[in-house]
Length: 323
Image 1 (tube, rainbow, N blue to C red):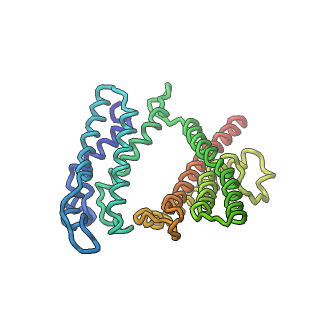
Image 2: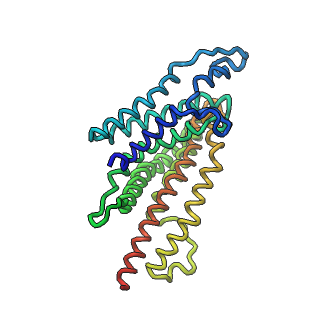
Image 3: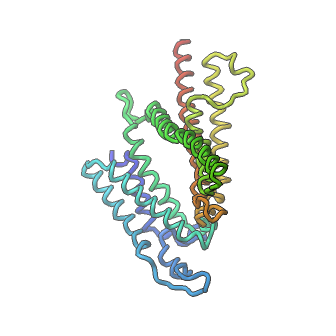
């Protein structure tokens, strides 16, 4: 039972990544030799004046929380103490640490910072996200009375994904109202009072990007995307479900992956520079707007998985009715 909990595996991965000697693996910097790496390269210096200071900020010593929190998770599971909230807390702390690390280091290295990370760091990043996801997925894993194997309740996963897109989409869609109001206000101020605010004009573009990208999953959930149907409308529900499964697996999800993959450096470079508007008085949150690309790929990809589960239920239902 101990090893059937995903947070135990994640905690073990973090401990292994922390203590094992990864230095020579793949000829890259060890995932947990950050302090030595930073001291040797003089990261904490004035890059403009070329005056380097080998002192290390206290933040980097917080990495020693990783094994400590991992041991606590393992201990709590041994004592049958509920670790769900603590796993979420630990996973969020770890993830925020990695994000801050990238923001601090990447300005000097750019997207190439990922070439300096060892397998220990990559494993820990995955395990940190696993702690968060596992806290939600583990309750969905149940034992079948007639079998010893555990199965995932895919209907609950479908419901979880649908609710996520409903919450995000129904919240963000209100920006369409604010877009209209702000646009009217910009026109009135500009042509009625000869007053203009660049940040206000750019906010319309930001809101449009948010609505277009963050509501993609909700639109797919409600089947409101534009379809070019030739044969699909004439099919019965079973054949439609087969087309949905095929289309989501071989087209939708791969496209979402491609969008995420090819936008990686684009978004990372924007974050490393904390990219802002080209206008001095514009909105200096371009890096946030570009992150919506990742959100789009994630939300639509997840909804594709939900649609696959939904279509498989239809196919199974038809097969059972045929027997």
